[in-house]
Length: 225
Image (cartoon, rainbow, N blue to C red; front, top):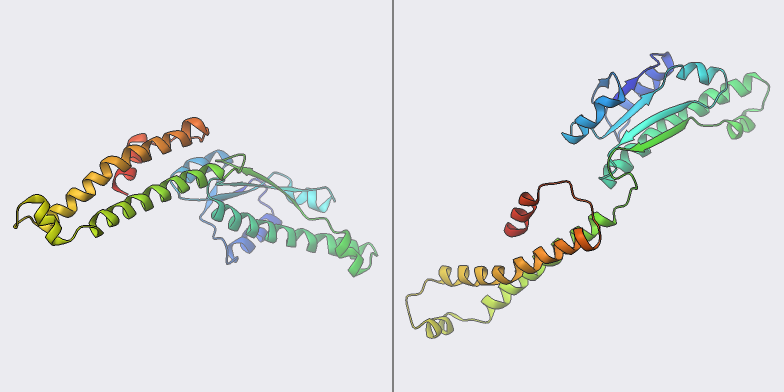
């Protein structure tokens, strides 16, 4: 998303460069930065570039102009891709502007590229302000370990029993194999699910991982995973 409070030729040129980038696409324009977080919560946009008032004027006056960037800090891949594209585009524009100004002032072209200062990108994450992904990794490790133990336990429980052994243990030659399978899965889940819930409880309570989601949905996902 783009918030253009300058409405200058330079801000429009940078916006067109962002539209031409292979890494990001401009989803639309907003009137103020306050309109971005609701779109982020609905996953309609993942980053927002903000051109402040007098942006082009500051560039022409030789001041240190700034471009704001809000992004979703909870998704490391999307954040890295979006911020990389924004920084590359904005920096290249400022280097070009400064290079032209310094050349006009008599500074050699090669030296002018060294002296050119890029536009400062002020980065602000909307979620996960500390950019700490260890909480997400810890939660994923617990879920993966729980899922692996559940599948392995079911596989071992089923693999150790042959059809003849099952019939001898049940005393019934007509016991459906599907019923035996479901009973093994249910028995294993009765042991593993409480242990997994306890492990998830440690993630949030003992290690202090933040959680603003639905505990019911998380429990259902854990149960059916």
